[in-house]
Image 1: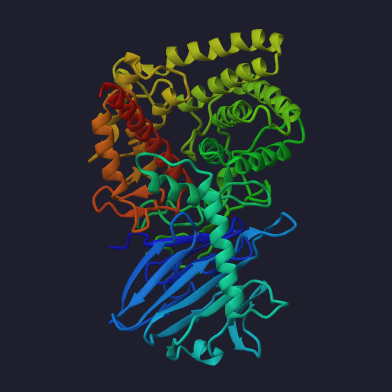
Image 2 (image 1 turned 45 degrees about the vertical axis):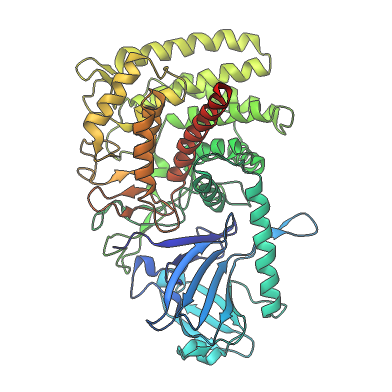
Length: 600
């Protein structure tokens, strides 16, 4: 079964996906949202790829170098062994800036014997639109696209260039390399230089991971998820991507295929909150700078999402020449959802701002700007909280009064009051408290459904929605409140399928949902833990972890029957929720161990 068996490499400028057999099947250069150089994941025949191939006598295994983004694929037939070490360079330069060029290094490490392999090198620039031609030059292999848009990439290698392009056998007697670069190199690469790039990049990631605390339980999963979230952050602007891919379908053969290479305010804010809890201040700082830069006018409403370089127009087009992942069309570039109104983003953003002010209060750079932003958000929420919207799941049909959106409007005001206390703004506290109480009363009056004995998807609706589980984690209601406990039970009854959760079961713009949304299952597990069902929560958590791919990575969705991964990959949402769950269990373990030691 294909289970999105890919590893991600990256350098906070772009990323690439490499299959468990060392085929580079997805990469956009020079940046995350650029057009693809390799896109076999979206079209087996036309997409383009860069594979390292050995005969069937070799067994292949794959792992990450611990606590890094260095991906190692090992080929062994017993007598002959070699490794492909894939990475995108990233490390500190002497001037304090980062070295993160738009390039991929495939370092071929000789381990034993005289292994033989072939290269299948087939770049298809510009999403395989137009003709890409490849030429062997004196110093490199050049690939040029002659379509509507001119584009080039350069491949440098220590191996015979003609043999590489022609796919002839290559015998490995010592270490070698491939360097795929978006730019022509001014200094000719050598194996020694590429080894140095590898070591510097390895040290960068080891130092970064060392900032993440060690946890008693699930430490490896927390560390891998943290590195994955870092790989989805864009250094230049502070944006954080929802995922590294476009158009991997929520269900095979359906049209729920979206481009996720953008910065959703909701997803990114949730990521920042979790990553900063792990001690990574710079990710939070850059993201807050990204937000402050987006809002030049005090009354300008936030879009739900932006391009990674702060673009506001994300026009959606389809690439009809590509077949899509396992025939799931259309392949989309851009995302029309940027025009939607989703009132929950203000509360999610305010929650992050408050968390950063508390965590870094002695070290906050832009307090005045954040206070101005806080007042602006309160003004917008005060003006618009009573209006319907598209909700967290981006329904493309009519607006509704979604419970989650209303709760997050309450969160916006609640956190604004807390921020006002930090800045000692007493008059604002008094004025905003009345608004906070008004919104809270409205939610209790209209979101609670007596027949369901639960808070439902929207005002007056009989439908359940997994997002209402977040009412507790955002502090709207206590975990042991009978209304919340009853809501958790109703969510399980109506949305759980063999321990995996639907987002919702009611029909949307594309019919009935047919796959599990991974973050919702993590939310449910967290809720079970909070209401006291800790053993069952842990059992479900362990089962869910077993559905990851071979490297512990998750996409957006899971198929109910086969348990295969579906949707864009790797998904920031899934990994941030994994971290939250794992920390809950780990802290519980720590408390129990202390109590046990006291009883001895």
